[in-house]
Length: 303
Image (tube, rainbow, N blue to C red; front, side, top):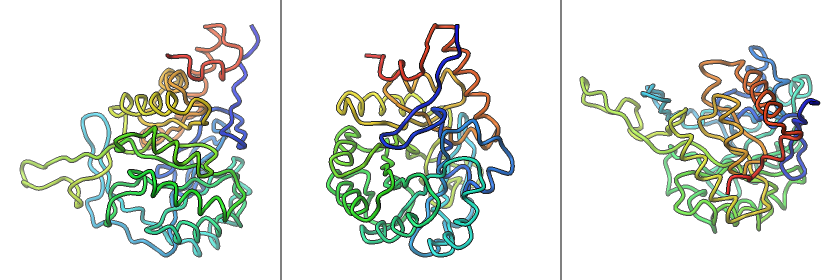
């Protein structure tokens, strides 16, 4: 049979493949481009950037676990002005559409960052509502009204396709997704790290300085798939970028069957920077073996 069509979209954002390199694991994308083949990805999401430089957490920031890793990086970044000046001019030469990622402590900070990102050569902007390891009073992604406030304000400030990155730690992720969509998000990214902790029993202290951090890797895949299912069931037409623990083409197909229109790869990049090509090839092989003419036929088929 003919090759399976492997294009995808997240609302108005067209993707040449259904894979997206996830934020937080590929730097600004410039660094990632030096070590991998970006043509496997329909887009790549840069590390989140804030209004001013954030130094991040004290070391140790990362700890391996039995089936993944804990991190409490603290979204270290140079600040939006430095990012625009240093990274912005390099984006057009990367050969892949880059999604900028905005983060902040207040609605106004999100708007400030997003507006400046919109002046760069980006294909879209993602609002990072879900990092669980910064100091402050909770997370935007855990509150539907707070989510709506940020998305609505950013939507009014930028014309690029807009995504909202949610958290698997929310009590009702479907409700948060609906709030984001109703406020102007073109898609939701589901999800992010799961809160976790690990103790060094010899030192009698947490393995990361923050104590509690974000857990990612293969072990969180069932949680992430559950979140995609919940969002799809409560939001039948909302475009979804699903991610969490993807290491193979079969993993990616599982996310699509749960309801994801496109699939992100994150932590797996640390062990294999070129994993995107393998995952895409495995997806293509599976689809052809099962007589699937268009990968989008798989979206949401698991009921």
